[in-house]
Amino acid sequence: MNVKNSFSPEIVEKIYLSACEMHQSGRYKEAEDHYNSLLASFPESSSLHYNMGLLLYEQEKYNESLGHYLQALEFSEEDPDLLYNLGLCLKKCDKVNEAILVYVGLAKMIPDDADCLYNLACCYKDIHEHSKAIDVLRQVLQLQPAHQSATNNLAYLLHLQGNLHEAKLQYQQLLELNPRHQAARHMLASVQGEKVSNAPEEYIRTVFNSYARDFEDNLVQGLSYSVPEQLRHTLDLLEGLRIPFHQALDLGCGTGLGGVAFADICENLTGVDISEDMIEKAREKGIYDSLVVNEITRFLQTTTACYDLFVLADVLIYIGDLEPALAAIHSRATEAAMLCFSTETTDEADFQLQPTGRFAHSPEYVATIAEKIGWAVQRSIATRLRKEGSDWVAGTLFFLSKRTPAPSRCQKITWPEKCLERHKEP
Image (cartoon, rainbow, N blue to C red; front, side, top):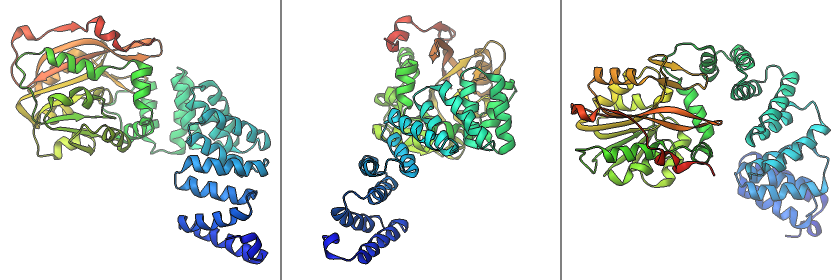
């Protein structure tokens, strides 16, 4: 249809308004057809390309959306709304540095636009330019002191840089703005050294939903993480195991790193995680027979199934008091069951909430609670869990059974250096 040559300006306007109405009502296919018919005759229309970019962005077709935003930019370089949405689209297309250039330019045009500055700060955060992100977040809060997301991100980045005093002030401010903000309450407790039993479910879910996309790259490549492999390697060294395991449970399965390490010795493998986004990443691996979104203790208290292998890789670091979780696992364990898990290690207390927001446990505390419930410690191994900055996080691997072990099997050894070196950074 050659709209330009076939219809009067009134008809063209009617088609355009109809396309906009369809767009706003969610009739995307019809709206797209109308926009395309207009673009065939008006290919240099910035507003048409802008609307098409917006339509495609709303359908998560980010690369196609970007093409139209860039064409709109050719004909309308000074449109703040276009630049704002272009920045969002560039970020969705993993072009964060280009998005930064757009937002920097937009901030010069409209320096008091808090939304633009906030998006710029988030881009800096994404590429780990944390000092720049902090500076821009401070600008946002000068413009909008009650900006919750900016306060939350500023608290997090200050905390990450070790500025606990200022982080504490920002967490306190966040709780004034939103007294129900469980993540802020938990992190405030961590910087104040408070004694708490568990991390709130909302905090864990939020952290891992936001982390799911880049979780494996950051953890394995960036932090030299190999806990699932370490757990599997040591399990293979234990005597008297009935392999394959009939029903295995990967609790706090995350993106499935534990499943990858253990799947070949499990006839049936179930993964459970509180994060919906983590579960979706685990599903992509195709190694689990079933996946469940749930908090692990609640799952164990409601399931009727029994399991002969339980794996918790870096899960109990979000639980302080281990007795309820270990008791719930024990209640769903067969008589020949094995339980493998890791903890961060402290010598100062039974367990303590660290400034990182994670819990550390003393090996003696873990052994005492385990034996109280009915677990027998087959082996405990001091190891290094992952890097944190330039340092290693000290941890312990535990291997428990429901059967009484021979005295010679109970030992605490140090993980062999050759195994720890498998994921060293180049």
